[in-house]
Image (cartoon, rainbow, N blue to C red):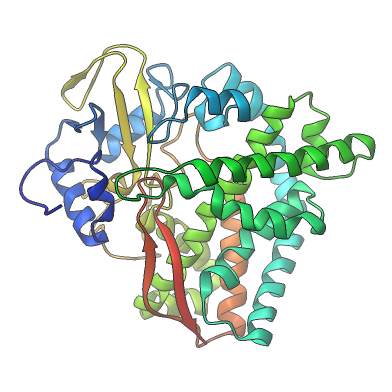
Length: 395
């Protein structure tokens, strides 16, 4: 697909195989149109920051229940595996979010901060001892995976199996010859559900102070528990993993910004996390469905139509972010939509992701002062997340 001065089509699988710079140029075209553009699949693309925020904060108009991924999960998959919270509207969404939000309160996060620091120290110690050269597997994946397993209370005996299944479970979001191939991903989800069901049975018999025990005691059905676990393990690990990998590369490409963070992590870490998330947009887009006719950006969108909330475009909106392609961890304010645009589906794990990235990069830059990425990240074409498949590094 060659970009010309025509309306870019985000429904064309070839779009997601374009180089990152070409996709950014396409987003600029879409934002410049003002009104939401229509893709070949009939959906409307919300490319401007203000449109993404409005759709995020109007759940009465922009529904998640029909499904937020592209394509939507088949009905039989939702029946067998249960609905993820991202594919729910109120009151079902509010009920489940109310239960699981107990795991992300400030009190709980403060309690696990020691675990987060300990895991970061252990990962960096292993890098020093083992001298790996590929960052995603050695560092970026391990951090969120080990933190979430610790929070959930997943026994060590199950962790190797789960880690292998996470990569398989997300294969359906990868662009392959224009098609998504869900087979291996669904089998991986089934195996993950079996693991969590086994652990939940153990926790019902002998509760401990972990998230699985709390959820098992909260009258969640087996499918609800499995669906939430899949969301936490896949989305929580994938998004933070990609943010960590992009973060290292951005610091390596911007030594002035790296010097700020290394010199005063306590001061600059919050801005660093926000700017990495804005600049890399770990989640590229989500869908919503119009509950009724609604005017947005000067265009009347009809009831039943799909809209695509393009976070990757909104996070580069020139009307909101000065010099939006520049990586600047002192950027303030930074109203990015990398964790969502607000509203009931704002990411529950935001504070946890901040903790993980802050602890990990503090440890990395302290113990490995010459740490840097080597070459460009190997990106995996995906219409869902800004995925880093491999990233070489040296230290």
